[in-house]
Image (cartoon, rainbow, N blue to C red):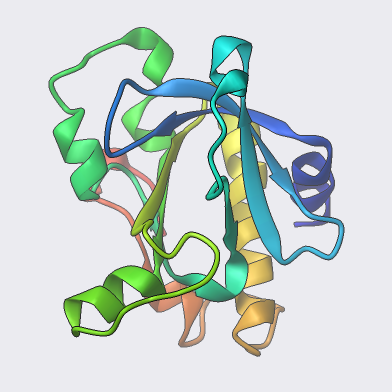
Length: 167
């Protein structure tokens, strides 16, 4: 996990899928206090000013491996090789989406965001990011950090059988 955290602090390239627009390359970064994930577009996307380019790890309710989210489903028809492989994709589901489903108005950083949907180009970066996220989410939830076999983040980390990954 330490190697993944270090990589995230330095910035990790990935493909971000959004509710609107095409998937695009971003650099995913972890704040020095390890509480926020942020992303920055490359190229002309940098010129767009958006206030919700970060999520607090405390707002993450679930880590999904694969392409199970509504955002990924909307982009399923696009079979672009630069969009990453299915088994190298993840979704961070945020509590804001659960609050909206229960009729509560979310506030704060990324209040309008329900998920953060990312794909990676290679298995090494993907594995390091998954290890780092699992570790930090367990720590955030106050769970023992030694393994992922207990209740908590391991139960909310899923993968599909087609992906061939054990969550």
